[in-house]
Image 1 (cartoon, helix red, strand yellow):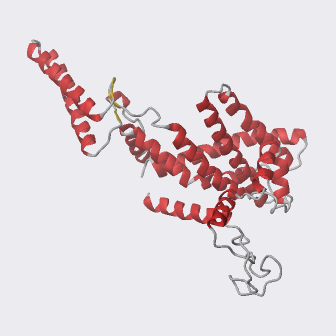
Image 2 (spheres, rainbow, N blue to C red):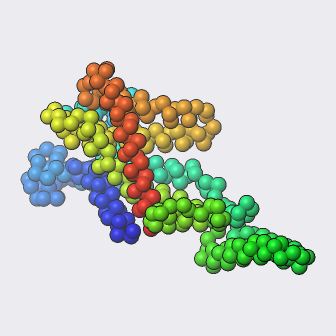
Image 3 (cartoon, rainbow, N blue to C red):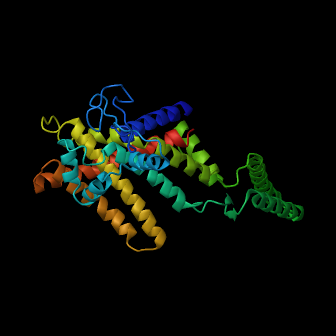
Length: 353
């Protein structure tokens, strides 16, 4: 799966660079150039009319910091014009951007990529160890691999003592079977220790994966063996391949307006990208609110996304109430399918690596 991750990194990096690189070049500072330092064209005004670069470049640390904030966050007032509309009037924002008001707002792709970065950074900071600093062997939970090894060895010693006292052949056979299982667990734990794995769950026979699909079976088995590593890989894959949500979702939105001459794939792409950006920003806010301990996070997570999708659908496409309602119901269904497809892709690209 390494080649897929390399492609994902390249695509994400290219999209990010294209989205957030200021189209007008660097800013700040005052010098006396008469020709553009980028293309050599004679300057007329504050910007080069040939390539768009600012006429007066800078070489100060303060201006560099300003460029960083401007490029990464699209400051210059765009953020503060975009976010309120995205939160409360998403349909208006979507339609205005599609109709040509580009300089006024943060582009949907730039906002999407920044939201992805901020979302997973928030998850990492707020998630901690996710309660996975443990080793589970059957019904017993230990705090480290060493503790689990000691526990299994103690259990083997007790089984040996029981077998020495056993009289009947069936009792001895049952104890021998238990000892074999514990010895197998001990060998596995010692392998974990050798490889530096400190968090794991050893499945019993009843916990073995029941599937005929080899790829999924291997992925689930790996996740059971080391859930913390599996979650890390899932988060990593989700962040790298988050852009897949856009091409996965756009065809479903097209199905709401099949063969429409008024609404193009570009319109649907802007709608989807702004919508996904809002959902990620909402997840960030709810994650932080939950860490503070404010109640109502679950209710907000259940009610806000459908409400936001309805308002954006109705406003972006200029629909009547009834036309918006039936399309909204379909949109919720399509969104569930699209997210399920994305989740399956993340599992295959992440855990199977």
